[in-house]
Length: 259
Image 1 (tube, rainbow, N blue to C red):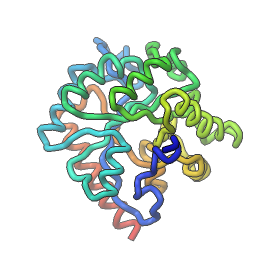
Image 2 (cartoon, rainbow, N blue to C red; image 1 turned 90 degrees about the vertical axis):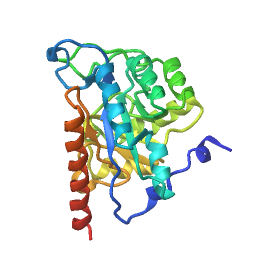
Image 3 (cartoon, rainbow, N blue to C red; image 1 turned 135 degrees about the vertical axis):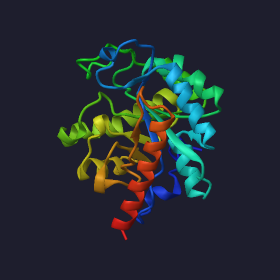
């Protein structure tokens, strides 16, 4: 079977009928820090906080899974109790800090990486501490551990401001590079900064992805603009419960709007 057919799209991805979006949690970095000044963008949770959050999910009868697993299960009518777990940017600490905790809980996740910035750092965050990004070998190790690898573009650019040729490189070029790295085409894409518009969404679909993750895509919400819930260090059980409820209410409102 070829790499292209080996990454078949979830059945729901091509449908135009509006369906409720799954609850998807958005993480970035998992590392120790002692002061909020060390995390000005709110992208870091400590291993202790992540452990507590994963434990909370399990206590509610929920299981964290990769986006590919989640969407395939939903297409087959088996999505009840599944929550998407995503980690943006591809930090080295996913391999050293997050992965052992995911394994402990028998969870999986999708790691969105930047094949144009292998082994360097988060230069797009000028105020934050420098965080190292995975090398090619690190990405292969994550994939071999049963985690899903998705594309976050090449260089972490705002795609809504790029020329068409640059957009194609970010979408198609990153996808091809990840196939070279892992042996298979990634199913998923994640919009840098959560920025998207009609052009970017249409080109993401045309590039061959099965789905794409956003943050709060508004009226563009759908399989190529899946909303996600940002998870921070401050999110204990009470806040997670509120965020879960907020997601459910938002999806009910969207369902009414799209009738």
